Length: 184
Image 1 (tube, helix red, strand yellow):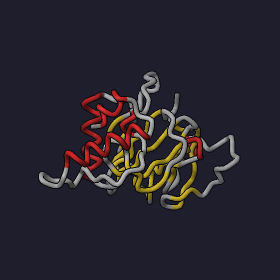
Image 2 (cartoon, helix red, strand yellow):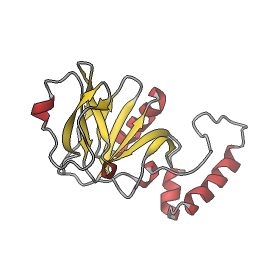
Image 3 (cartoon, helix red, strand yellow):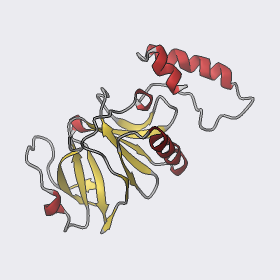
């Protein structure tokens, strides 16, 4: 499985080519000569875009420790993590992930584009996606509706009660007991 179904010429980060309703996109060879281009995510791909360097470091460490199959691209503000989607139907900006990180989420089924080269600078691929490995996006990276902020929480700020409330948030979002434990 390839994480891109094709490529598009971009103006900076924005696609110039039409995307919706298109079945035959440009090839990588066609777009490499442009100053900016992007990859149109495959229908079963998902992009977790973390624009905070500290949070992107946290996720990179988790990805490496668990040896998750995803592509990791360094950006000017953080990193892009591209996985095989495991049921996330829609994306959005500043989504709280079940593990507590904040990310912009883009799903391939909505013709999302990942910027791969911008203003003559190709983005650095830190980790390649293994097309032979069918690992999917872990449940702890699914977006959830929550206002809990575990990243900046310090001792004495009600961490235990916040975690208990968060368990209820995750189970009401359809997480199993094991998936909830993994998130916590």
